[in-house]
Image (cartoon, rainbow, N blue to C red; front, side):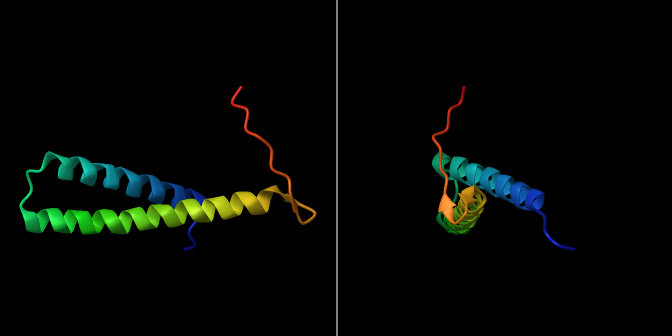
Length: 79
């Protein structure tokens, strides 16, 4: 079964949530060194996955904003 954009969003959200939990755990400083290193390593992997997902999303947005081969970027107005 093919992965959908919604699956990617869920994966990103889950990875980000897991990363936040790892940071909280490491900040407490209660883990033995070996466990802390394993958590840190997992955190690095998740950070790279999240960065790639954000980069991919940025590329998709750029492609969607191109009109006749030219970018048509506009300032975002939250109002």
